[in-house]
Image (cartoon, rainbow, N blue to C red; front, top):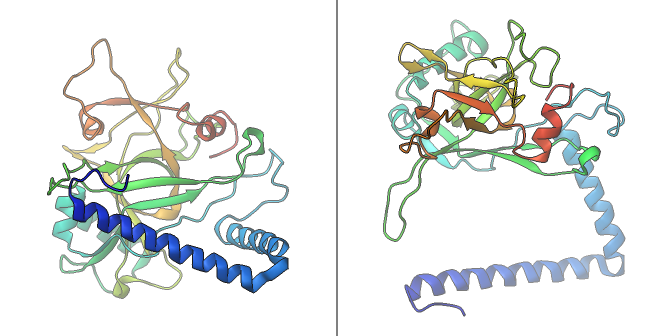
Length: 310
């Protein structure tokens, strides 16, 4: 059935758009068949191999034999959509919509320490920022678990209000593991979590042109920190984390997106009773203590149980 006879115009419009898309793709395939002729299969296979190799060489520096378990883990390039999801956002909009309460102070501190020289331009409340609602990181090839490709999608999506037939949606601000420098954590030393710390990703953006300097990162993220990992739970053998606060406000920072290792999943510490007021959209703000879930997927389980770094 094409329609259930409700909102007929809306449904038929969408159906026609899909049909046009299928026709366009069919025309493209016909053009490819005419172009390559009988040599289509070997040519396509060769092009795919070359494209995959080229993409991996630009996104993931390879280190020797990929099947060797003794090689250090490569650092993946972080992929953003080709076009910003939100354009020309004001500081007020960023603060209100994405919950980035300390966006301007943390960005100013980051620029002064890492990017803009002392006599360079300064960020102000009148600047506008392009933002993204998703960051993708290629998974490392793991022959041990038959994993050869895929992307780790990380979201920083603001809530949407109800409108028309839509009931709205809560914000989705994923938690991630970030590479940090500084004092070693004795609870993770020598493990896959060494040098990593949990943060909640609130806002993904790029610097405006007048603040961009060649050779310096311009794709940044506003994050809220968790405390360093505590000792492993003796029963579950997983690490606990808690929110990090500066006074009554979550401790936050602006970091390059390249320092994000990959996403992570936190399990609330429920205790003897479950708080009925907790919901998916607010549990990270309501609960005090969380456990790092190393069983959320095969990749996370393999990496967190491996002595090599994530």
